[in-house]
Picture 1: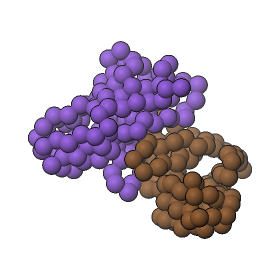
Picture 2: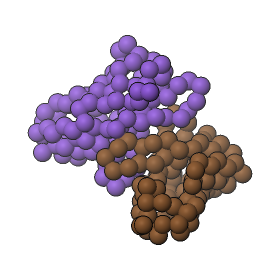
Picture 3: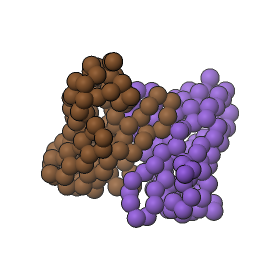
Picture 4: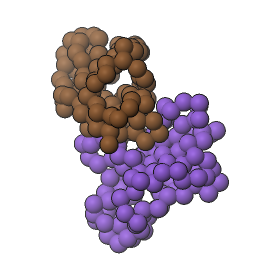
Length: 107
Length: 113
């Protein structure tokens, strides 16, 4: 069974203070690693899909990277609007999610 | 463009009542998924449809949970004889056949008293 562990559980940042979120996974064969953003009271919003070690994807201040055992979501110079819970998932049609990292960015 | 919509957004049920939750996927999306999200946790897979065929229902927690998608578009998740442990947010997602990126709706928050 696929397992996903995210760390830290919570992250408080000052505006402009870059940081990274970790997603460790255990799978029998990686079929895809997904990053989502979830705001309170809303459904997860798709950010990135990664398929193979060494792959990287970027969107605005976010950059996702992938190794054979973990993925990182780097937040560069965050703004208050980047405050959200970031979820990592693995799978193909049946996604297994981690518990998420809640990021709070203070102005 | 229109995303995934779910209704109702909030549902309060007394223990033992039956509930029905509706999902309207993105137009043209063949695949539809239901997830359950407990407070402070990530979503957990319940079931998967491709068109009207339910291809995987391994995540449904008990036989009180039933999902259908009779015409391959709108889906309904039904929970019979609700229990307090059924309280959660129920998320619906859809995707096209050309990608496995799932797009989620806003969810239905179910509270069982």
